[in-house]
Image 1: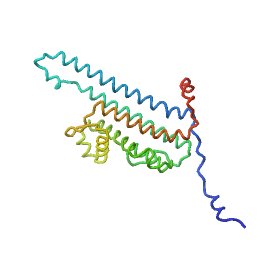
Image 2: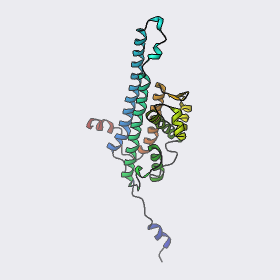
Image 3: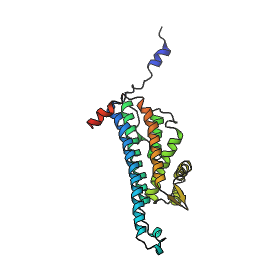
Image 4: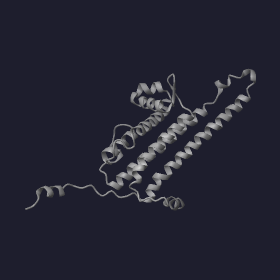
Amino acid sequence: MKDDKNESVDKIPQPPPRAPFTSREFYWLDMSQYADLRDIAEFSLLGEAHFKQRHQEQIARVPEKDRGVEAIFAPPHQMHIHWAVIILVCIRLEETVKGVSTLLHKNDALPKTIQNYRDGSLIEKFREFLVESAGWSVDVPEKSAWEDVFGVYAIRNCLIHYQASFGDYAAANEKRAIEIQTFSDRHGTPGIIETWLDIDLNTSQACIDAVTKFFDELFAVLKKRSDYLDSDRLILGEEL
């Protein structure tokens, strides 16, 4: 007599086996992203030092009796260098999110891609993709890491679309303003002066650190599925 129960279980479609990532794929994930973040961090520090020196040179050219007016005529480049850093960090974040989702979709034959998710920011779509399509825990990466990258992305949007006017941004999108406030409360930056974001070296460094931590947790999960070996770093580095 047939075991109808077992037979019905056998007929349930099983997901395809999850192939390990190749060394070259994981090299891109593990190496290039961190290298770019290190370069961006160095750019931030060098830019800060350069414009501080330039400002001091400008002050030196002002007669001593007129000292004080230099603040009025100080160029905004020192602040804007950190705007650029945050935008660069978000470009790297976007590229990584898209790359990881493509890699998971290809290797696991997932029914949906990140493009199937319509609502929310790119980072929110990525989180939904990981949980719903890839079957990840909602706590991987951990809650604070997600909150931080939401904050970084919201800061970027405020800079690009509202020229750092936090008041106007909050009026247009309260949810994103709360994400910035959460980031600011946790890291002590950016400051909010009257209704404007005060972006400086501390802000850009905090954004770099937040995205680095997010990558750490994201890649830790991916590394468990890779055939990647430490020796591949040198071999692939020479090839590329």
